[in-house]
Each structure stands twice: as C-alpha cells, then as structure tokens.
Image 1 (cartoon, one colour):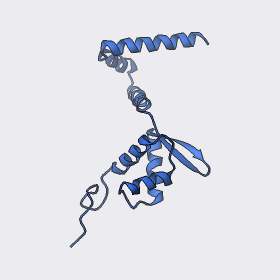
Image 2 (image 1 turned 180 degrees about the vertical axis):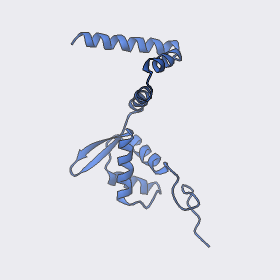
Image 3 (image 1 turned 90 degrees about the vertical axis):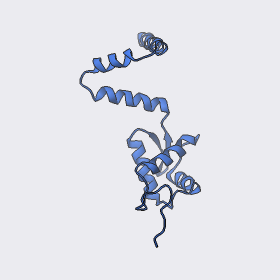
Image 4 (image 1 turned 30 degrees about the horizontal axis):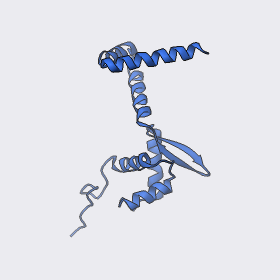
Length: 137
C-alpha cells in the first residue's frame, strides 16, 4: 500500500503547478522586510511545506523576480527578496497589455471608456499633476 499524497499534492505526489510560488509569494507579502532564501525556506518548513531543497527555494524566488512579482536586493553573496506592491504589479500588467497590442490608442480608449466617473476624475487629476511636474523641469 502506497503513502497517500498530502493535501497540497497531486496523486502523483507532486505539488500542483504554481502552488509553491503562491506559498512563497504569500510569505514575502506578509513580511515587512526582504527575506533571504534561507528565511523563506524556514518559514515554508514552519508551515508544513517541504522538506524543500534550498535550490528549489532559490529557483522559485528567482522565477518570481523574473515575473516581476518580487524585487531582489544583494545581501552579501546572496539576494533578499521582497514582494512587489500590488499597485506596482497592476501597473506592470497594464503596461504589458499596451505593449502586446499594435493599436495602443484603441487599447487606451477601451480602457478609459470602461472607467467609472470617479476613476476618470482620478486619472485626469494624475495626468494634470504629471503635466505640472514635467513643466517644472
């Protein structure tokens, strides 16, 4: 008789796609400070995730960084990681959506048409502030 897989694993015993990344991202978001891979590995173990090789944690953190979900900072010979703020992440996604289409005007027009009147007012205010700031240069 085989060992039953944990609830966070598929019947094959493998973790579901993206599950480890989600756990790691949650740990980064809850931390006030940047965390090293060793810090993340320790917190994953405390949550009952693992045992995981240090290299698995480093790879997961590196992928989160490549996806723009985590920032990294040099700390000695290693890196420490911090989750990207949700607003920065949303802005990156919006820029990526613009970059993925040839007709930027159409994408922007569609976006603006769907804004609530409050959001439209906010956008106008932000654009005016940017214009004023650029005029000061």
